[in-house]
Amino acid sequence: TFPDSLLCLTFHSYSYCIFQIYCMHPDCVIQLEKEKCMERMAMDDHSSEPELDCRWMWDNLTCWQPAKIGQVVWMPCPELFEVMSEENDEFGKVSRNCTEAGWSEMFPHYVDVCPFNENGTSPVSDMYYVSVKALYTVGYSTSLVSLTTAMVILCRFRKLHCTRNFIHMNLFVSFILRAISVFIKDGILYAEEDSNHCFIHTVECKSVMVFFHYCVLSNYFWLFIEGLYLFTLLVETFFPEKRYFYWYTIIGWGTPTICVAVWAVLRAHFDNIGCWDINDNAAIWWVIKGPVLASIMINFILFIGIIIILVQKLQSPDIGGNESSIYLRLARSTLLLIPLFGIHYTVFAFTPEDVSKRERLVFELGLGSFQGFVVAVLYCFLNGEVQSEIKRKWRSWTVNRYFAGDIKRRHPSLASSGVNGGTQLSILSKSSSQIRMSSLQAETPAT
Image 1 (cartoon, rainbow, N blue to C red):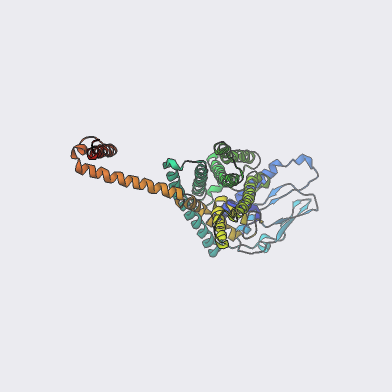
Image 2: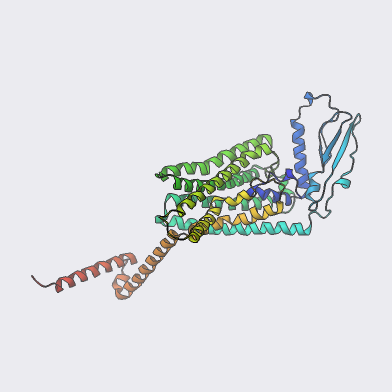
């Protein structure tokens, strides 16, 4: 249903662009095409080709390029028809002839070769996209709550503060920012199902898109850092973690800053159309797409390398167990690494944008929105160290609470004074120790 130019070079979590087109009012599509046409006209140097008799023309649907007399210009169906068409509709082309009197009438007409649904998109298609949007909204909400809880746990307990968990915490923050940026973008651009947002050219609107791309790009880089850290940990014998963590932080937050800043400058100078939510200029889009594809590809290579190392370690004679238990451990380790490395992004990473669009939406927007939740569960809530620390703190709290209540009952004078529970417990411990020492001295026979 969606043309390639409107797919914004869709890949990975940038399938949001399909939803952007879906939510557009027909007037919005026409407005964007008109802006692109006007920009091409402004950039064209008429003096360089004075022999062209028919100049640029915008006929309210299609942008016609300049031509010489006698030349026939063929153009595909306008974007509007493709957005409003049914699934698997075939589109033709329309043409105009450049004559001495100017452009001729169009042949064939739009209605003859450009099928469209007069009621807009079909009800089934409407329900499909609404369902996917509801799915990723639930997914990001679930991830946001679970990741925030995981961050509180890792920050609260000092015994969990180590380089490995610091990297996990940065990854959690990137997932949190990613979810927040999606909600902000949807709330500002598509809160109302009309054409208002496509006429927004404000700095605030463009800043939202810059923030959105930065959050998504940072998330991919911290997934890459997770893979790089684990691979280095397995390969390097002596690993200065603190020094490496400094560079990890620069890569994870600094590199996306540079990439998004370059993209924003290029958009402002060469493709300053609308709210920057549509990416038709492939060259500029590669400033963001390139680093993401590179991080996914490198992470996949690191993933394969780690699996090979795990196989070698599990087959070592020092590790007990039969063959079935070894493969079970390997399968478990592999499944744990897939969400941490973002390996599922490789499914559609290098496939053409016009292939399996519906499946891509469900997989990357729907299921991908739950990735933060899965990572929080696997690397925080189910982590043995985290569970042990929580249990230890819980036992300490219950013991202190029990003794504090017991002291209040046995020593009302202490309870009535301003001594707190911790001080009361220490006093009780000291007096108990003194009683035990005097009892031992009394029982010891005189020499």
